[in-house]
Length: 221
Image (cartoon, rainbow, N blue to C red; front, top):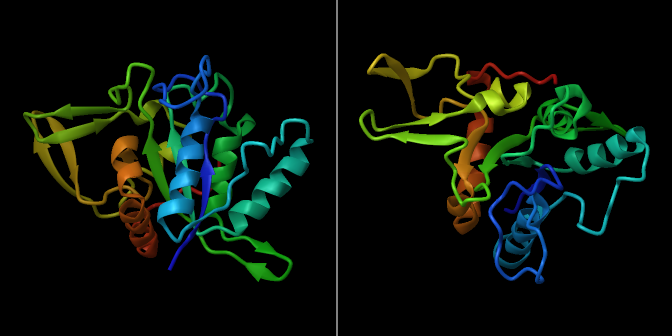
């Protein structure tokens, strides 16, 4: 059965790899990646996109109105996909940015008009940077057969919901602790793998969420 999907992202972040088939002179932003997700959901899956459309600008609205509209969309979703991009985190407090608020709202159990929602599953999709690389976030270590995640650049609510399994399976290699299995409530996957198999990774995030009691989950910004 298809799921309702909300996408959280930094609209104007242009520190992403350029996409083909855009009009000449168009600068690729994170929003163009959302468009591709929406197309894939419409054409190839039973899932339903619950985020705002590209022509549905909220910029001119008051913050309270924006939060209400976004809250409606998140409330009516099952999974939140957050696009991790190189320029997603502005040089300001987390509480003054929309992505942390959207993640917090997704994680909390909410009530609206007599209806209740459960904690959303959350999946982090890492976008390639301007050079087509994921190395700003992922770094593979062949010696230890492991991958380092550079989470310090993320919003706290994302960072603290990664590697937060209460009883993790770990091993040591060259003085580093390596986590095994699904050690993060917010699983991450790089864009090229995600877009080729959306169903698989959506279901992975849902499976993790079904076992959310196994994780120390931070729900506030």
